[in-house]
Length: 353
Image (tube, rainbow, N blue to C red; front, top):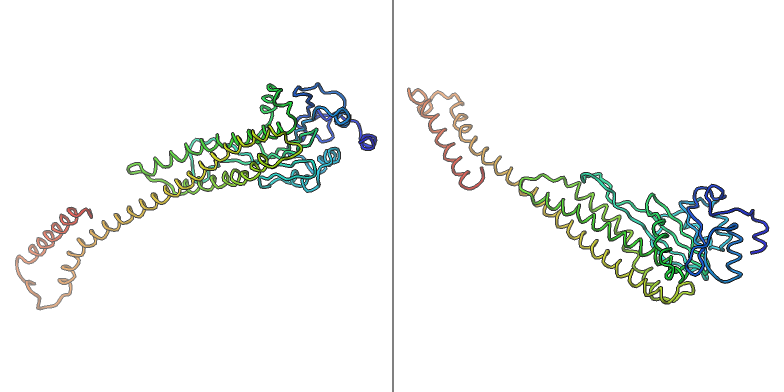
C-alpha cells in the first residue's frame, strides 16, 4: 500500500470534478461505526488509514466507468481482473462470485416506462445493472443504465447507523433489497397494463391489436430475465458463510429472497394469463372469421337462385318451356323473388344472417 501511495498522485476522489475518473465517480464516502465521516485527504490515504486502524469502510459509487477509468480503483482495492471486466462491460446475468475475501455481485435493475397508451411498439420495462464489490473495508457500486440511482438508498442507510455499522455487507443487503423492491413495483405496474388488455379483449365489439399482447409478453420476458436468475445468488448469500458477510445480515438476505419469490410467482402468473388472453383473442378472431364466412356463404346461396334461373333462360335455345308465354317473364321474376325470400328467412332463422 505504501508503494502504491508513493507512485499514485494524491487526488480527492470524493469530488467528481477533481477525480481522475471524471464524471463516472458518483460519490465516495467513508463510514465509521455507521456514521458518515467528513471527507478529508484522498482515497489512498483514507483506505490506508482505515486498514491501519481496522475500523470503518469506504463506499465508492461509480456510473458506467470505462476500463481506463476503473483501472486505478481496481489496483487500489486489489480487485480480480475477471470481476473488473464484468463490471466495465456490463450485460451480465445476476450472480454472486467470490474472489478471495472479496464478493462480487451482479443485480439487474428494472424500471417501469410510463406510457399513455400501450401499443405494439411501447417500451414497458427498462433494464440496467448494478455491480457491487464487497471487501472487509470497502464497498464499490458500479451502475449501468439511466435509472437505479443509489442516492436515496444511501440517505436511507445513513439514517439507520446501527444497520450501517454492521459493515459493507449491510450495503450489499440494502442494494439487493432496493433492487427486489423495484421488481415488485414494476410487476404491479405491468399488472395494470395486463388488466387493461384483458378488459379490451373481452369487451363487446372491441377490436384488439394482437401486437399489444405480444409486446407485453416480450417486455415480461425482459423482466423475467432480470428476476428469475437472482434466486440462486440470494440463496447463496443467505445460507453460505462468507468472511465479509455478518451472520446477522444473512437473515436479512433470506427476507429479500422471500420478496424475490413473490415477484417470480407474479411473473409466472402474468405469463400464464397473457397466454390465456392471447388464446382467447385468437379464438375470438376465429369465431369472427367463421361468422363472416357464414354470411358470405348465405348470400352466395341466395344469389345462386337468380343466377341459375337466368343462366338457364340465357342459353337462347329455340324450343324452351314458357319461352313465348305472355306472362313468363313476370312468373320467372316472381319465382326468383320467392325463392330468395325463403332462403333469406331460413338463413336468418338459423343465425347465418
